[in-house]
Length: 451
Ligand SMILES: [Zn+2]
Image (cartoon, rainbow, N blue to C red; front, side, top):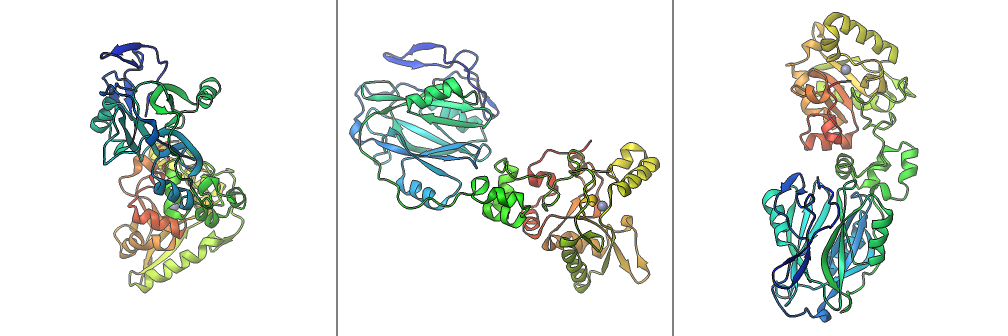
């Protein structure tokens, strides 16, 4: 997490003639992605050369914006990169060209210019650019959140004639940096937008030079929450269409878990990824599924029957559904019974309070193992061939084992190898392939050990 840098107070000479802005005393302790960078450093460091950079070979960067990546901006001088993003990646919107920079010449920056180091953070889904060697070094050495992407272009490190300031902003709300050479845009942000704090001049860019070749063709269709049709898909509780507009279940999962899917409700009981735990009750709390079949919600009864059939067919033995949908009042009775028997703490690690049970969704199935002499109880399920088969194969049918051993700190429940939760076949495959152990982690949601 970046520390929002306050005022750019101190002005100080460094070296012979360079006039650089330093961060103010407090702000000089910049927290880079969770690690304190102790050395005070300037955003802009002096160039070594005495001569002025030549603007003629400079070109404007292509600027992109992504709402889906949490108001991230991306700047590139690479026309192929830019064209590819524009034509194929609906997560990014081309905003036109922005400040001018110099391309590398045979891997080096032209005379009197300095390298701009580019970093990428998968955690913050954001790029970071700096001409400050010490800032770049701090990130490389001390901050695991940032991957060094090398030098992608060059800029001037000092003001001069024919140069303009590129301003740097940071948003602690979005966890993003933003750069602009547009003085009125920068002024507007500073005056009117409390979400962005001004960090100072990132670099200096020439005001004239060569053009960048224009991008051509249609933009790729918008993805995720920006996709056209998303709000109607959400309104229609159309899970398949929502996932499709994200570009598939894996992308959908990543977007939800990293906070890039704010438009997607996790509390809509009509959607298969609805999250119900001790922090997230069923909503509305007296919800009843529209249609039930064989003790489960009608649309998942078939997948349960297939799983039951295939378990027997695979020679794992017979399983039976002992408890599927449970109403609010049924759950109230079960909760009361277990709390009377085991006390509040023990009882609530086994039974949910009414309104907090996945069984009320009609998307949970408690299963038991059956043999020649009848069926065992829930507590006999662990260690049976049925339990092993279910653990290894239920995901193929859209079900996950919801409360695994050793996950009580996240789920709030003891291990329940018998409690299966339907999340849909596409998401269950992602869950299985990703090696997830809890639905909370899968969704990037906080642990819910307690009410
Ligand atoms: Zn259960």
